[in-house]
Amino acid sequence: MRLLLFTGTGGAGTTTVSAATAVHAARRGVKTVLVPLGPAAPGLDGDTDAELEPGLALWPAGPARRAGRARGALAAPLEALAGALGVDPVDERELPGLPLVDEIAALVEIRDAAAAGADLVVVDVPGLDRAVRLAALPADLRRAVERLLPMERRMLWAMGHGAMPGTGAAGPSRGVIEAAERLAAELDGVHELVATPRTTGRLVLAPQAPAPAAAARARAALALHGLRVDGAVVPRLVPGDGDDPWRVARAGTQAEVLAEARAVLAPLAVLRAAERPTEPATVDDLAAIGLELYGDGLPCSLAEVPPARRPVVERDGDAFVLVLDLPGARRADVEVARRGDDLLVDLAGERAAVRLPSGLRRCEVTGAAVRDGELRVAFRPDPALWRAL
Image 1 (spheres, one colour):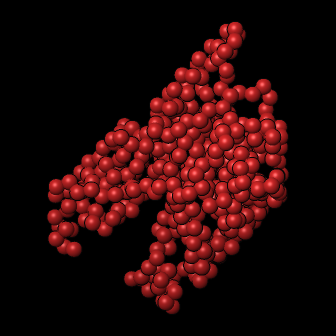
Image 2 (image 1 turned 90 degrees about the vertical axis):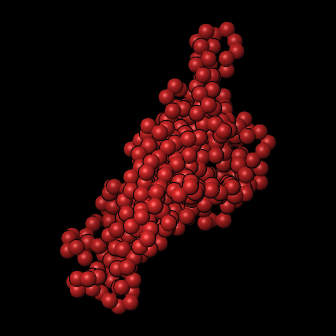
Image 3 (image 1 turned 60 degrees about the vertical axis):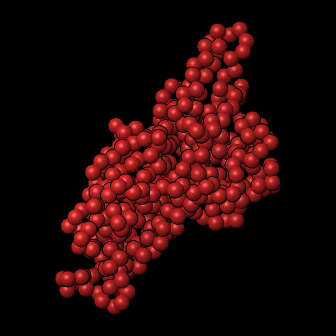
């Protein structure tokens, strides 16, 4: 199973491109599921399971469905937590409005769609910022669960020792521990799906001046959270032929944007599609766009994408270098810091914690550099820790 997540800049046509990709794949014999996390493309409407044509199914991931999923996935854990804290439980009707709940429900939908038996799952994620949030959320929430209820505490409860380590005070209730375990297992499953070699992202850029820079930042941010981008699409390009001065001028401006996109996203392929006189309204309209983008081929390989080799540790004399893939990142946008066994990476305000290999936990950070799409963090052994362990 291949999972392909489309996301793009505002007004780029991400929904149309993702739907056209799904239709194109299905018409070439690939069993495909389309998961729209926003409004579905015209001609593909609906919030219930539907086979749009042979080999193409629409996954019902609309707002009503996600609200129900939020209640099912989170009501019991939150009720147990409220009981342990002695506060009023959250009304299930309030769940969809809580922070991150819709994102969690969206991740559950993606996971379940991926398990439905299709060869290709195409996900339409409106907005670059939302795509980055979805990529970051599983690991972020998993760390939050671990910080609130560390594994040692959960193991003590499992062995029948309810007291808090070193205090003798009563530990969390059985309901809280079980809820935390269930939530942690859900998040681990989603995180594995995002980070698997069978999952990639694809960027859709509006042919407008700010789009290439925004796409480059999103590419680096997605890589920071383990989601690799495999290509980009620039649709709605105006033909530059003819005598209309306005159209010729607009085509020239769009050509400059396309050239910049290819430069900042290199070596990724940047596909293109022409503007159409009317918005696509049928499955056949979408198929025509897919044919323009991909020709007679498939929109992506159905085999695993070669896994990234990062992070890796390289030896540098008596020191070490931790290498992370951050394609398109600029050194001015990157800050690193050490917190316990984690390396904290800040990429223009987007943060991630990278768990350090055991050897580097006995080292000090001495510097960092960004070169050729790689973040290289230098470490020097801490003499006291290195001798002690």
